[in-house]
Image (cartoon, rainbow, N blue to C red):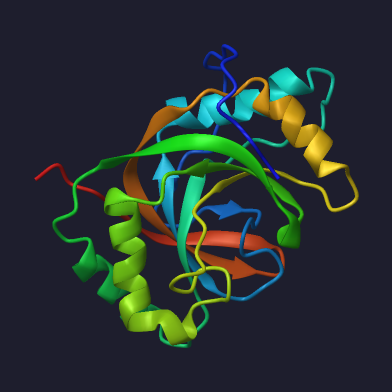
Length: 206
């Protein structure tokens, strides 16, 4: 069951993200929760992240337990043993890729992983980058990011014990489709305690 395209106003909010020190930044896992793998993520611009974070804040103004949102879309989750080779292959694929936009079109529930997500259109450079990685590494991608299975999204809430459809409907009341910019690709190594950003690529306008 999907919710979205509700024409109710929403404005930018406040999102404070820790600054990147060198190539290493510790955060908690999302799609890669509980698994050992290397995730390739497209990092959203701050304005888009603020909009997505505000959906939860506006729907649940008294919820003080809401954690800061790391606005991103997972392009691939690599489970192989040749991380450096994998990263170099991704660098080659993205060598001439400029910053690009994605359009978020709906809020929905993904039942199998007990999450509420904001879903962008699966098209353009977003889809091109995923397909490029999957073309070479599909056998070593996790089951959620394999070719023809990958469903791009940004997680807004993980809560396996909650009535996600009711919560999703409330969040959708504060959502309207919008475009977001991706200017950086990050490589996030998952561990039992969270995950580390071990490298990144700043996309160049050309």
